[in-house]
Length: 577
Image (cartoon, rainbow, N blue to C red):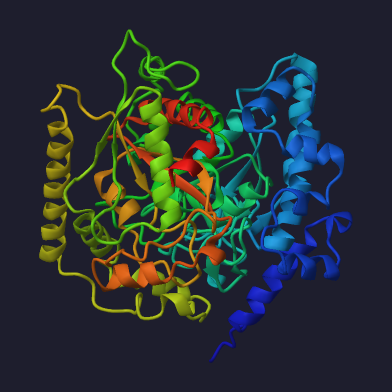
């Protein structure tokens, strides 16, 4: 007997309607407000705040550390903070399409419980007490769908085969965050397949860049980047297998950390092609401040995630490492005369696709700020990163897109148009070819490590970290993300990396270099896609890259670099352009 399946378009429309229905009527925008928002270039800051009252603006304008301190000091309640972020997230979704799941009522119930606990015990449950935290739609929360952008998993949890566990399973990282006092309140949008540097799927459509709606918010943790750019969350959880917490952070003007894979628990997290373990995805955090990344990373490690997840190494937060690197500079980022200055490499180009003018200016700003603070800067010329990307992508797609098509077949939905031709079903890679790629990856890791070590040959001081682009553009025109090697190489190396915001594209400063000679056909496409007026206002971020298991170090260096940037005025850089 033939079973009539509900058309995927109908299921997607029903899901969109159900999500909007979870927004309180008093928080819903009028059709004319939505139309007005669609015509704006920039919907951050004053635009979104027209829909909020003064108290909402005050609370949601705070970063994570001030929030938890205010709750601990009794100046704010968890309920008041959670309600303010739920309201702002609801408005953000209506004008930006950045949420997959809304569970505000559940979050407010938890916030009430936390306030009652605090009133009774006069102390917080943990270091994240009352802090609202958003989650990429890979993380399971009890009572909530995890579709991961696939229509076939609406009403269920992707990857959960046991019907009795539907809406009952909880990702380990979610359990850990809640044990620390956090308040999960929504899940953010991501692209179909996860393997895409933009955020589009057949459920919610497309999530654009709130700073400049001509451009993409990035991916795959793009909804998280957009929500935070709109201040609908101060900190959230994403994942990264090819740049997925770094690209959206850079594109949306926020911070993120991609740890070494074995540092945080991936247990019970939905994923694409989960059987590919040669280069695994890693959990990462995204936030409106470096201090928030430090707070959440340190707090989660205090729960000893390695006890429950055997893939996590038993490595607590190393305060001594963090303190020793932070002590290399003063509060303004200036080198101290009593210790070695930092030695920082700068990757100006990967030699395959050169960065657009706004990105080059951002790199110069960081390098100039560090030099002016007495630190050493060298040009970084490692083994070609396109080799790492080729190995990495080949392994990610070794199953012949079987996992992707299994998820599509559950509803009959098609690939989104951007992914057609790149993820067609094909025979899986031969085992011997797979093993050969793994060996090539290991060889590349050794070669890169040898190069890093060689930086001590001239002066006896090894490079502490490397500054490099996250992409060759500041955000990206949808459909024109041609080159992901700047981030993918770091996944193959399994290095720790932090993204920080630097500046914004400025059409008056970032004019095209007419003398630039493209390196190849892909570089020509990227270069010709740059239009100063279209990119104007797009955030420019950089990634700060350290080696494996050096998260404490790269967090400390990020603090120093941001302090150095803060001490260098934009006017100084304008005069140098």
